[in-house]
Figure 1: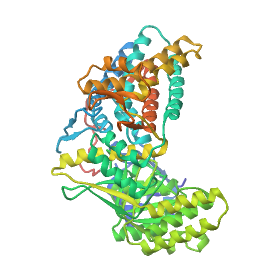
Figure 2: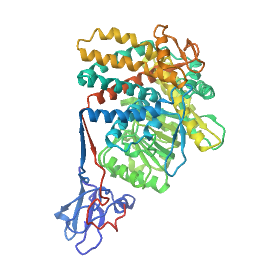
Figure 3: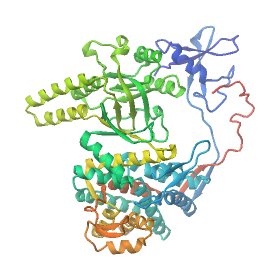
Figure 4: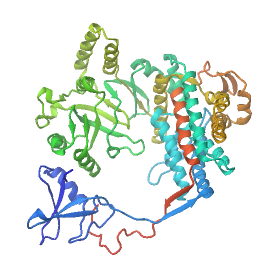
Length: 619
């Protein structure tokens, strides 16, 4: 790939300048990014700081009287490492896992407690959300902190998959690691243990799918209430789901007042996320959030930045963020967008267009109708250099996740949307293909269903942040229930599947694999035990009583009685339970196979390049 940015140093000049190679970026908008981010040492020296974008400049003999250097590579910094082995390494990882799990597990169940997260320079937050708590844990010991990062991955994977169940996943992972390390210390083969855990996990996930029941409209409120530990939140979300339908979208935002309200607005969601994580604007949630943004909708693949420059210049002059929806954005185009976003020159994000082939064009047309824009395609004779701001879509708010994008368009184009829906309805009435009818119904639902925007209010910022996390968990749990159904809550579903493990063990020939199955079986009791303990009961006694009860019978930690949990409204989404188990078994079994931990030693010197004068460098 040809280099976009070139540094030109005149032999007599004291300060290097930035130019662009042929057909590359030639506008101040992007050239000043490099000028503000690079620092050089005149002559044969390379970069003076590890924080800079490039570490090396290659001489170009064809530059004439100027000395031309092409920026290549990244800085290579060697650091001393600490290496620990065997039992010492595994124990360090276990202490890290326990640190996170012990902080998270106290929030489980209807009588779970909160955790205060204190950050320097900001107000403390009082939260009840597992993944939020897990992400805040940081230990001084590097090896223990490696265990922290691994269990954080468990919570993050469960959150990414189902949006809830992060506390359950963390508790399961802790139990797998604690029990598994005992077997390893006793001489069991860790690799065989892991195979046994993986096989048992696969069997249990299939059993969870079989046990799941389809969710009804009446169940929306119950699922949301259990997830948030608040009946009022459950009722509000249940009403919102009834308004937007099973395929509708729920979006949670903060309110400017103390009241929490629900508004139905025009919008759409599609299953494509950001192309590069470098576009992320909210580091805590790992999302891209764009306010009052323009949208470039195209079926074209962009690899050269010159193709996008006309649009980027117009949007930059309008001082608006930009979302690019295209077949793909790669190479020089992607790297330059990331560079300018990172430098703060332009707020931008790129996502791939949804669906494939002809259905992709149809979905792009729907997006254009929703946002008031046009699909930029050569089939219509529209090229990028002819695009005006009026041809770009507009949205009040865009939220891009790792695997999905939510566009809140507002009510500015309701007439266009209604007309488009009528066209699709006529088309559905005339087609004979059941598959086409299903896809048309899906498109109609996305266009007409809208988005239920829940604006969370509270008297204080601390309470608002805590409530917002509860609403988000409840919304995610409700959507997960729609996808895969519901199972009894309170940790009962996992507990009642423990006998299935005994039956499955008979199919395993390897003794250590059977021990891996036993590890998973022991872990299945952990969520129900922890919920009972948080309610002030003896967790082991509760679990023992539940072993011989029917599948639906469990311990209601709120009322302190044994009853049919499904009938009592104590239900969990099957997807949440399955995802939590899958994430815990995956990371937990990997930790068991560890025999060595390599971590960085603390740096002794602050100066990245001894002797270099960095006083004039601006990063």
